[in-house]
Each structure stands twice: as structure tokens, then as C-alpha cells.
Image 1: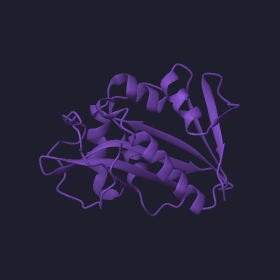
Image 2: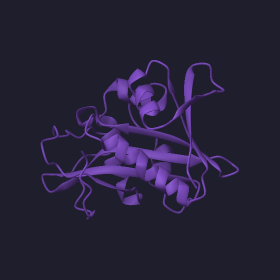
Image 3: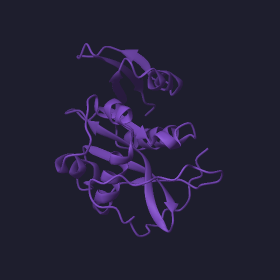
Length: 188
């Protein structure tokens, strides 16, 4: 389970931009913090994505990507924007905060529907981090007036399809034949 703690930023890990950080294997009792991303997270977000397995990056971005383009990182960490939000799951390792998961949503034009996307580092899966990220984003979306939230994924990503159903998302139609879509109506 995820223990949510008061989030205090600590020094960022000393990892060059675009380089993979060696993430520790989670141990019992590693506290994980769920918080909004901000511009100071640029290097940590890049290091996190570089540390994901090729399959995890493929599943997250629906295609191959070894490094996030600067424009994508900008969308992840931008706080002044009101149509998209990113939350990070972080923990402390050797005195530095590291990212172990992320989730974000982007609003449709009418602002009543949002698309959700998330990833949890391969080594940290199965510990409730994804569930905590989704719950936090759903709460934020409801407070912002979002009525429906959906997620599109590759049909081959069977694990996430199971999780979508477990989180209360129902199958919905997708405009892309390669993807499956799940949608949830949020209580307002």
C-alpha cells in the first residue's frame, strides 16, 4: 500500500537529462508521496521515463520512445495550464526524491471530459501506487467539474485493461481501431 506522507522536496538526484536513474527496489515501508508535478521536476521526470522498460514506455505512449522530447516534458511539469494536470508518485532514496510513478489528465474542449494516462515504474508495480494516483486525479477532476474520465490503451496491455475495470471504468468506443477505451462517470 501507499503511505501518503507530507511532501517535502529534497535535492534532485544527480542524473543528467535523458539518462536513466537506477531506481531502488521497493522495500517494506518505503513511504510514497503523491503530489502535483512542477517545473522543478523536469530532470526527474526525464530520468523516470528513461528508467522504464521499453515495454512500459511503449504501453504508456502507445509507441516506441526512448526519451521524452522537451515539449512533452514541458506539458508534464507546467502548472499554469488549467486543462491538464500531472501528479507524481515519489519516494526518497539516498537523500533525494525520485519519481516512481506518474499520472495525468488532459481536458477535452468542453472541459466536462478528460483523458487519463499513467505509468508506474516496473519495479514498483503491484503496491497500490497506480490506484492512489488514479484516485487523486479523479478527485481533482471532480473538483474541477469534470463529469467523465476515460483511458485509451493498447489491447495487448491486458494488465491495465483489468485494472481499468477494477477501478470502475467500463468499456467504451474508441476512434482508433488499435486501442481499447474505458470510461467512468464521476460523481459530482
